[in-house]
Image (cartoon, rainbow, N blue to C red; front, side, top):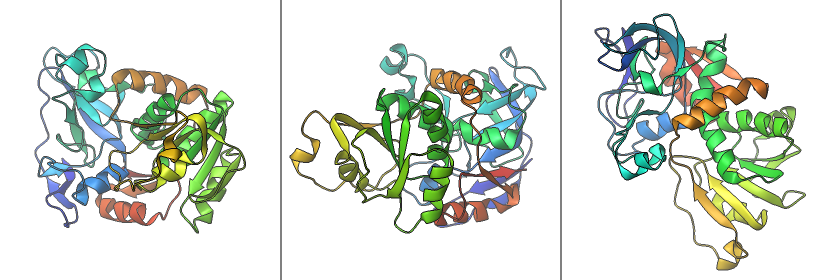
Length: 327
């Protein structure tokens, strides 16, 4: 197999030849068809997420075909198309797992962070954490659903049932969840970096009611806001846009420090929540909802060997939607 491998902060990923992995009991081997690139990959490369397994094959938005199964594995068969997300394994017995909150497991494994991921021609996954994707004919289009879609979905659920939803940072997750919001009959208000008129036009093309810069005041008070951009200063900015009793959800795994702000900004029962990982139930729900909502992902394709270029383009905001590596 071939893989683009991360060795150390500050170094580009390196193309390596490795033996094909052998699935153990309860595992499957996947021939990767597509793997979307995520800002979390940049956080690992930049050293903002501590203690990755090194060397590590990044990538946690994987679509592929099962080409081998481990002993006793019955959930999937050779030839099945599956999707693999960020959360790759949980202990099953800690207090969080026992209470249905496996996204907070004390002893998890994460795809592309503490176990090898999908920037490769093949990868291993726990069969229990691979979602059936037989109804998705285009692996490139489906790949961003495995994180941008899933974390976006969990963020939207935590945002509550409000009608007016603000979204800060209009990247891969935002462009998927905007479509879900419109399907649900909600209004989307998109906030982008100053000068990013392309992102504002992209948001409007997907049905957003309004788009503007992150320091702008929307035309109506928001019921909730979701922050996908890893910028801490957006938290007090978002709080100022939500109505009394409104909620701000921080959807990323990493964010710069949140500056101090007056208590009045939070007062009147406004809330701040963070999102951590996902559960398998989140995945099952969203894989079922995405086709019903008519979600169409916007993707830019890169060959596997151009992973460093794709990461650089993501950092610079050179594309709309999501970058997807294809071996």
